[in-house]
Image (cartoon, rainbow, N blue to C red):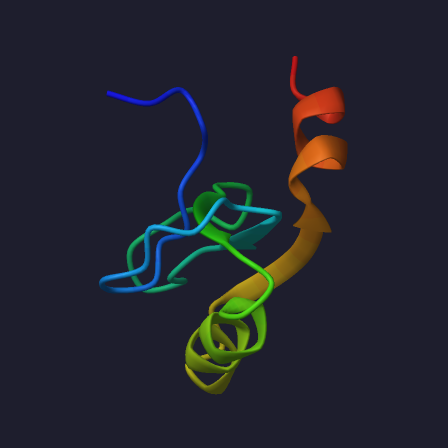
Length: 70
């Protein structure tokens, strides 16, 4: 098993570069953030998927997300 973060897009095994932070307001409290990881190729597609549903809250570089983690 690899320690390299992998893109969340179905069938993709590319290295993740982006974190897409989201929540489903029908299921989660407003402060909760679930995450999907995205490679460069799938960032826009995954962002649009979450965005049209009103779930997308933030898109940040994986390195920045990791630096901000407690």
